[in-house]
Image (tube, rainbow, N blue to C red; front, side, top):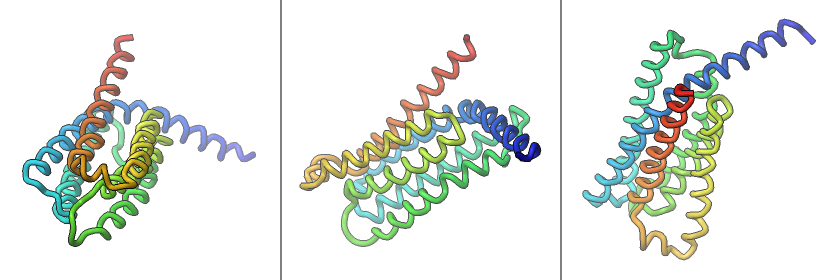
Length: 203
């Protein structure tokens, strides 16, 4: 075995472990931001009756862009605070892991844009590919991100089976479903990360 190769791999693993702690500290405010914006978007969608596929996608894609921009600023601030380079090799690995499922999800969702109203199927697309992206990111960040991704995947599968007769669409607004999964769930996960991280520092 090449000793240089082994040393490089050990360094990569060490860097990923160190970065995992940094990601965990940055994740709590990012998740809280995502949760607050998700609940806000759901409220706007229901109050303004944004039920067409075009209006639904415009609302939630716009919200996603704002969340991504906010997450970038939070992660950048955290990296500077820790005197770490923001665009480091581990950061690039995380980005490379989450981009493919997010792009595929975006393409499939936009292919639905047209006439008609949004339904739970639209929410399912968002949840499936977002859950896949989180699961991929969990291999390079804190392990709980992977489990958080599984919640979205199981939730999406449950929605598919529960909506075989269309009863879910009649009972629940797609904007409300998005608010529950992309709003409340993110808030709950952000609180969990904040409390557990605070507990570590207290110990």
